[in-house]
Image (cartoon, rainbow, N blue to C red; front, side):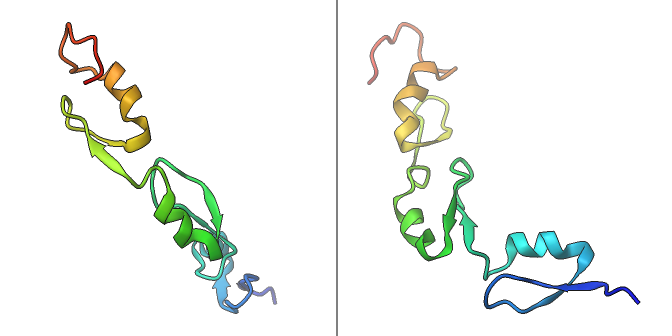
Length: 96
């Protein structure tokens, strides 16, 4: 008889998971070796031991509101956004 569960191979986990859900489990397993940065615009995978430090310094974690369109923009991208903001006042050729 064929086994319907498989052992998660992430060190420290040891959970038996239905084979249909194994890939999903491996992506979300708290014992996986890498974690995805929680900031949507970043998308980097970071070693689990370094994720806190990355989150604290991730450039996508600091957001500011555009004074014209009120969108939340990553701080490092604000200067470029201001140059192309669709609701930027016309005739304003300076980057306030």
